[in-house]
Image (tube, helix red, strand yellow):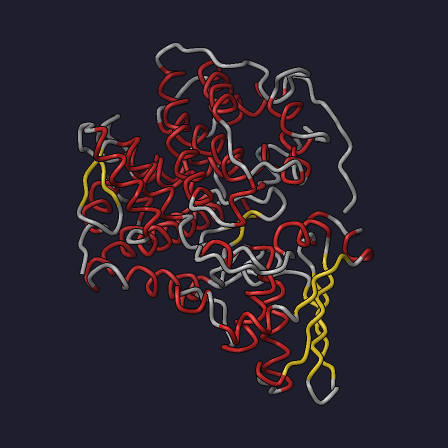
Length: 468
C-alpha cells in the first residue's frame, strides 16, 4: 500500500471545528439526511442484536454498579442508566457482533461511536432536541470523525492502534458538541479533549472482548469531551497538527492533515461511509463476496475444496490473514479470514449464524480454514486507499479444477452500496430477534420521519426496550 506523505495543515483543528460549529440543518444535502437516518437505523439494529452478548452484559453490570441517575435507555433490554452509561453500553453493543457500519479509508466504525452518544444525550438529560438536531449532530460526528480518521490511516493501524477507539472518540465529541450547539472555541476544546482520551489496541482482535468495549468507551468519552468543553475545560487547541504530543504526530508515523480540511462542506466524506452485509470484520468481506460468487457460479461445495489462495493488500493480511487458532472467543473467528472463508464455502454465508459457539471449534470448519492461504499481492497493495481491501481468490478443488474471482469493493462499500430496502431488511432481521414486532415497526417509522419528529429520542428509547 502506498504510504501517505506526512503533511501538516496549520490551523486544521480550528478549521474543522469552525465548519462544524457553524453547520446548519439546511446546509446538509438531502442524500446525507437520508444517509444519517440509515446510519442511525443500522446502528440501532446492530446494538439491539448485540445486547444479550456476554461482553455487553459485563458492561451493563459495571454501569449499574456506578449507580448514576437513570435517564437514558439501554437498547434491547429493560435497563435505564445515565447518558454516559447508555453510550458505553450501546456503543459496545453496536460494535458487539461485527455488524456495524464501516468507513473504509479510515478503517473505523462511526455508528457505534456517534449514534449511541447522540441518542443517549437527546433523551432529556441535556435538553430538548428534535429530529433535525439529531440528524445535524450525526452528520457532524461522521464528517469530522471520518476526516480525522483519514489523516492517520493506515499508519496508526499498522502501529497497533484500533481506529474505533481513536477516531470514533472524535466522532462522538463532534456529534455532541454540535448537539449542544458549542461555539468554535468550545468546539476546538471538545476535539482537544477527545484526542486526550483516544485509545484502543489492535491486539484485542486475537481474542478479547475489549475490541467491542473500545467503541463504547469512544462514545462515552465523546460526551465527556463535549460537556467539559461547554463547562469551560480547555483541550489541546491544535490537537491534530501539534508537532509533539498531538494526535497525528503521536499515533501515526505518517499522516496527511489535508484529508481533514480539503473540501469541507462540499466534498462530504460521510458519503464514503458504508454498511456491512456480513458479521465479520470489513477486511474479510471482499473475500466473502468472492467466495460466494465462486460458489454460486460454479456450483461447488465446501467439502470438495482442496485449498484456497487469497491475494490481497498488506493491510488485509495484517488485519485478518493470520492462521485461525480457536480459543473460544467469538472475536477470534470474526476477525479471521481463514475461518470466515471456510465457513462461507461450507455454508454459503458469513452472517450471525456462522459464528455461534459450537462452530468456533467445529473440526470441519477448522480443517478447511487450515487450507486457506492469505498472501500479499503487490499489484493490489499498490492501489489507491479506497481499494485497500481488494482480493484475488483462487479455489482449487479436490479434482484439480480451479475457480477464480477478483473482488475490489465489498458489498456495502460506497462504490458497491447496499440498497435502502436491503438495509431495512437487515435492521428488521436483527432487531426482531430481540424486540417485539410492534417495536421494530415503531422504530422504523420514527427513523423514516426523523426530520419531522419533535422528541424522537424518548420515543426511540421506549421502543428499544420493548423486549420480546
